[in-house]
Image (cartoon, rainbow, N blue to C red):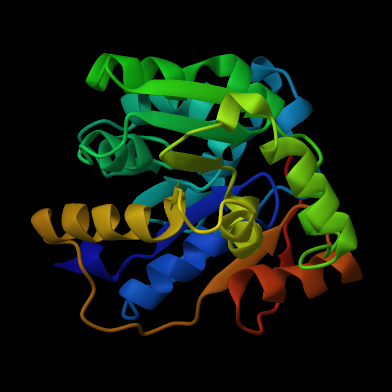
Length: 269
C-alpha cells in the first residue's frame, strides 16, 4: 500500500514533543517521522485557545500538504486540549489524528487499582478541564486532583534536572496536600518525561506515573496496523523542523529526543 510509505507527522509547541517522536521511532523503526516544533510561539500554556487553534491549523496544513503525512500526532497537551476535536473532524475518515490525552485516560480507567489520580500540566490544559471531563465520563469513581505547574516546562527547556533547582521546584509543587494518597500521577506535558525519575523519587516510587510517550506510540501502532498503513521499511531520513532556530533549541532537541539530530528552520505564515 503506497500510503504506508508516507511519514508520520508529529508536532508540539516546542521541542518537548520530541519525547513522543522518539517513542514512536523506537517502537516502529521502519516509520519515517516529520517533526514540527513551534518554537517561535512557545509556550502554548499561556496562550488563548483561539490563538493556539490558529497555530494548530497552520502546522497541520504544513504536515499534511507539504510533507504528505499519513497520520498526525498532536504531541502537546495544550494543543490537544484546545484543538483536537477541530482537527479530528476536519480529517475524519481520511487518516488518523491522535492527541496525547485520550491514550492516558484509557490506560487509567483500565487500571482498577487507581482510585485517586493527580494531574500536573500547564495552566491552559488545567483550565480546559479536558482530563477531568474525560475521566469523570469514563469512570466517575476515580477522583482527580489537578494543579497547574507553569515553572516546570521552562525549567526543563533550560536544562535544569537532577539538581538543586529542579528538586526545589518539583518538591514545591508535589508537596501540595491535594496529592496526598494519590495512586497515580498524570504528567500532562510532554516535557515532564525528562523529570520522571525525580518525580518518582519524590513519591518513593509508590505512585504510578502516566505520560504520553509509550502509551501513545502503542496506540498509534495498533491504528496503523488495523488500517494497513504500517511501513515495512524506512527509505528516507526523519525530518525535524522548528519555526525559530537558536543554538539553545538545537542543544535541547538532542536531549529531548535522546539522540543527536539536526533541526531545520521553517517559518510559519
